[in-house]
Image (cartoon, rainbow, N blue to C red):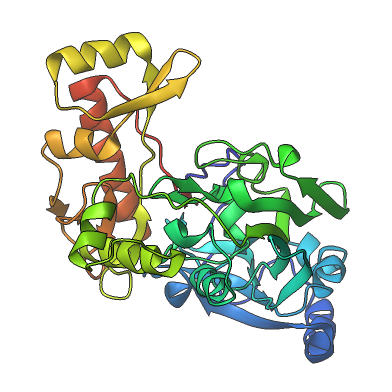
Length: 374
């Protein structure tokens, strides 16, 4: 089993009864669940809880509806008995096989305006809120800044972990504070923006993804914000909409249309959006690649590095639209790994490894997955 966090891979189990769990503990936890803000399902299917739509099962699923339940759960014998995988909406994970322990699903809800001085508001959002719903809420309330991040699937709690970004914007620009349960220290922790150590599709939470459980995120949302329309296709889409002076909501609509045309809908075909990061390579390698391929898109990467287009590398390697059984790369976007119907997680990961090997052999560039591969 592969785990991109680098933690030891547990051996999967297929029995319905969870090995090692005391039946008395389970009965006691189940009896209290309605009052404690969580629910328990044994031998739970995860097919509907990951956007790849792969069949995988968890020995136990614990769904948390109230943030206060998290501390008690992590201090209980239930969560100490088996390995724990934290799952939001499953839009940034590839499950390659069954999970032998407990899947903790964060389903908390709530948006609270902490303060608003008329120019900027601090807004605290529970981790289980749907990201796209929150973006539309912010626009409806007259805030700006998040319009470029519209239609990104997943929960709010996943946004700082991945430092989600799209169309020239990243969520780190608007995050003030992240609240999390520290599983290693056994207490609550708060991270200001600097302590989150944000980087391209990265953060302290992703680098230690089995340590922190994000429970809430506080954003600073401005009333006035310079719109970002430089990304390829954005101005053209606005022109097609006959919009000369866009509002944040109009820009969000333009980006929504672009995303729907370019990216396959997970409701129609299983995927997790872009599967590979744009790789950072040494400037010397980038120069060599540009000499050989003048049309290779590149961007400054800082500190002697250059960012190159993973989609270009995959497409030029002849892999866009290629499939092996039900696993393949989308014919609409070369970065998107797709499940055409009944591919297993292991088959999808095997195809992704084939893509990595082909690009490495052809260009000498190592592609890194964006989603967590478990």
